[in-house]
Length: 421
Image 1: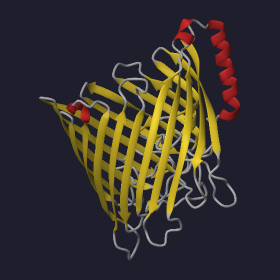
Image 2: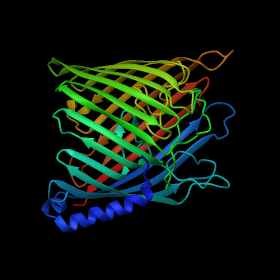
Image 3: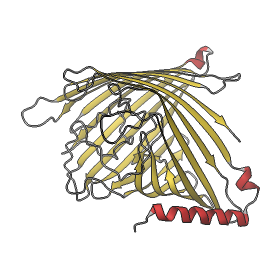
Image 4: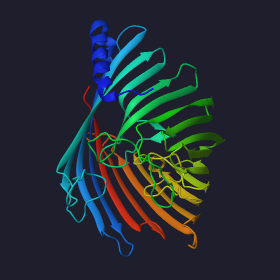
């Protein structure tokens, strides 16, 4: 069944509003909340490979995100409305430094960053018991589709999403999306599949799709163990099954061992040659403020891992720049985290990791593809005083490859979330 959300949404919002007016009570207003998030973002990406068309991408921008969330009207069926408004302002950019993904660029002519861009979204919501249906702007963070929020503005989608928690410990999700608004865009667009690197995905006549279907659930067996299964499919391009198991084993004395095991099978949906199996396992040993992680990811099949272009994916080795999801790629990572609260400095955290991938099928007669990446994050959240909850994060990454771009990258992010009511 197909819906024209551009036509249906205003009517739904109006209907929800009328229902609220007729049956509003303290919960609708009393449970409502509003926040203003400020995000100042500087990004510098240095292209190190020879023959690069651009030496560097470097931009600085300021973002504002206003979120309004109502409660629900009275009665067995509750109605509500959410809204989001976003504005991005250029602080510094030049034609030879454009392209960080922070700012919207002009569609025609020489590539230049716009001085400002913005977007808004509205969501009608209906609650029955412990189930909620949302219609309009949504931002799923689920295994088959994870909205990207790694730049100035978050990526959003348009569609319908039903989330149910009727059974204790069981979370169920079902949805259909028809449009995406990318993180550096103000336009709702049809969705495409990511096909960079050596994904080797061959598309037929359908290069884009106006339907992404997802469904599945997660069950919490015990406080330390959960499993999940989800399905996701971009109509006419690919379909995907994802399984996840996460177990936390307490070892006593402030120690624990976490196991995160993921498997995904991707196949074609008529209009492509998608064929991929991805298996990954990450184990994390935690001792007081220290965390030590080691993981391995193995891809096989005729193509690399498929996912909606611009979004994040569910691969364990998706990191700051790469996801190590190319055809037949085998990769491993080691990671170290430290929470300085153990030394009496709450709010200060450190993360560093190294990943290496090889065995990529680059095509007949070519040597295997190889990539490595190193990331370091240093973050601090002010704990008290007039600037309480002001967050600062410095992110550094370096990657080298024989078939992808060689990059050195730095990001400095200052963010603050201000509750308005």
